[in-house]
Length: 244
Image (cartoon, rainbow, N blue to C red; front, side, top):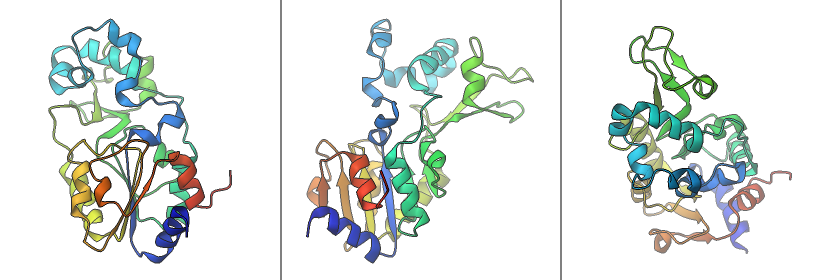
């Protein structure tokens, strides 16, 4: 039996399956991996790291520069789901996947049709006015000049978790619950070094299966039952029997 056949067998045998994903699932949609995006832009910001520019402090103290960085580096309004997203949506539709837990903020899982999605780091298509609570979308922010503001005059804040902010505890608790209940966790497109998301693997029951699909080694490889170094979209498409 090949590793792919084993994965497909587990997907059908296990009663509760989840997917934990990171930036690697969206690279085929034209969204670069976080630290490789737009190096030329960052050359003009010497001495300032991505982490600093995406911090709560930088947002508060340099709001206009924060939004300039967001528009030029972090936002991809034309991005579309790729076969990996569609494969996960099909697995859920077929009753073979309980939930997707993602570190991404691009919303592509929902665009592909996934329903049960836990966005640990928020969603880049939501911008909230802290004054009146009104919600705006990415296109509004992309079209705005300088700092985007609400009709009431309030300064919009992206509904994402910035560095220096805590994750939404309700979302994190839901993710932990899924990890504790699952019989099969598929990890894809993440190096498993960013916590607390990476720590979800440690909540697996001893008998639960762990499958890792990632081009590079991860700290949890030694605990994995299967490891794929192949293209993430190809593996998931085959596992979901998604027509190419």
